[in-house]
Image (cartoon, rainbow over all chains, first blue to last red; front, side, top):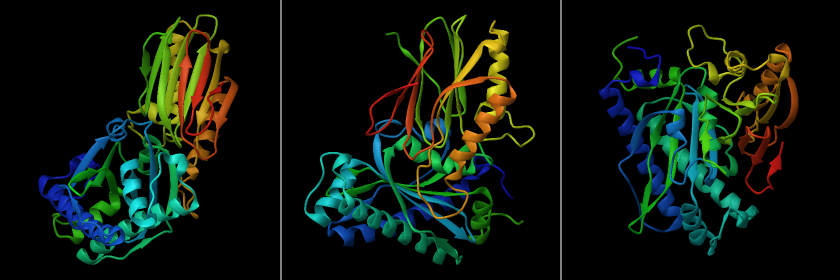
Length: 209
Length: 159
């Protein structure tokens, strides 16, 4: 059945998306691991269908400053993929790659920012590559965009983009665990409704047109 | 100062006499303060999209045009006079610089739609802090009619 809203997904469909999240995040964790030279594991990834106000309530609340890397998907799937990086993730990356961390986001200069963009972009690309070979679909990615700002406003970017279609947002993603510590870094895949239907059909879990 | 009343996304709250309304992390969204100074009735709307083009959409506060109209209606029902109501707005930023595409233009479209709707309703726009690339948290003091914009890495701005 073709769904019109994210909250119409069946449990089989949700499980399939969770599996995609698991494979995608797993691949992203591997690439992160080789970038920073540390073992990175993933938490059980989650698929969440959230109301707007629920989605912006993440660790620290909507005003918490975070770094965000955004890539837009086009081709057979359109949507947005976001890497939302909180300060301990930022420092994990910077200490491993540049040998020094930052005390706060004001310490992010060009060098630090481009390291974060690269890491975000590589994780997103590995995630998308895994997805596109799994479902044999073509997905094109834009050049990554970067910002440091309130996480509530970063999270509303996909919502505003697809807000005309739904009062909910679907996000697939999870946190990382490095050196036994949970590192909050969300990789969020937000396809639009049409692409979600297409993806589920490609994966054979949607019962017909 | 008394406790704050939080306005969510696609939401509107009203207060009379006194009270602090707040809405967090406006990105491309816009916060609209509507105020009748004489009776100290104020409303804060957090809209996300420019125009409600779909039939049967129940969430009026999600859109600039229906959000403003519905709020004016409710304010008048509470004793406000439409000719006295003034507006202050903040938001409409472009959070990410992406090449091409509709992404990022939403903020700009929101600004235009808000201004157009206010004009069509004959509401005077007193102050604005819109556009740019930074997120804003907007506070609205119903006791004084003053707004306060909080952004990352910038001093607070009174509107």
